[in-house]
Length: 248
Image (cartoon, rainbow, N blue to C red; front, side, top):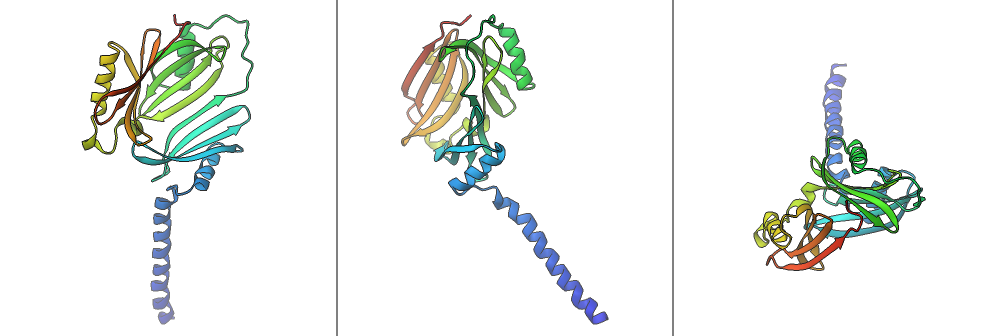
């Protein structure tokens, strides 16, 4: 009996060590996304009973990402995952089928702000613009909360949420090759020199067909500005503005 005991204990210990190693090491690699198929499965776990319409592999901020588009009922979803660890960097959905006409009065800005703050608890409002989008009166509101930036779009008369998106601020803050590029702070200063006294609501680094860019989105009064700045030279490569007739 003693011999059996002595033999059993080290064998059991060896088995426990092996199981322990497997249980603790597997999750480290389980989250990494290495294929389009894996990205699709991950997204469908997030949006259950949905259909995949598009999957793409791309580089953003020097990081390999998977972008997945799905549909479910009357919504289209877009989710971005970082390949290295499977972290969700962007998430959003948009209603693509709804009744746009309404005879109700336009809701107040205060009402929309309250709706947005219920949707994004403890959020800080960055901007609120009323505009016509595809013939539909909407409010577009941008907020920030902790490490995320949100964009919400409401029907201006019914208060129905038509679009919901968030993106990680950490993901969008700086390029990985800092020594080669101007800083995000410098890029923002260049944008504000082009549009003085504007409020920057979005700033991110991207590589557009091999060209490193800072993409800056700012608002000033009834205008929205999109500014593209070369990340190495600081030269403004693109400047677009959109006037909102229904601003008030």
